[in-house]
Length: 82
Image (tube, rainbow, N blue to C red; front, side, top):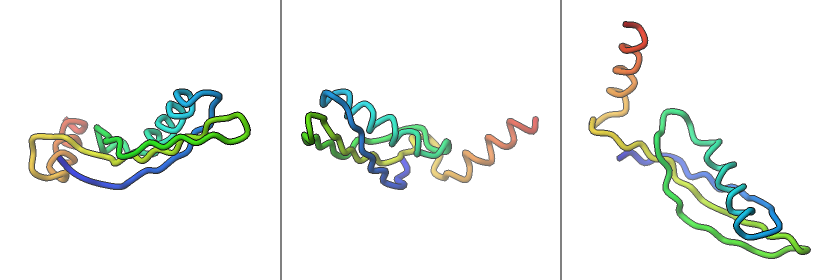
C-alpha cells in the first residue's frame, strides 16, 4: 500500500448526510487517477444558518502487489503500446 496526499474538502447540504456526501465527492474528484483507493481520515459536521457544513479528510492510497509504483506505470505503458 502506498501513501500519498491528504485531501480536505467541504460540503454544504440541508442534512448532515447530504453535506458529507458532497464533501466526499469533491475530495474523490481531486485524487489522481494513479491511485485506486482512498482512506477516510475524519468527518466533522457543523450547523450554520440552517444548513449543515461537513469537512472531511481523505488520504489517497494505492493498493497493489508490486513493491514500486514505477513498476505499475511501466506495466500500464507496455500494455497500452502492445
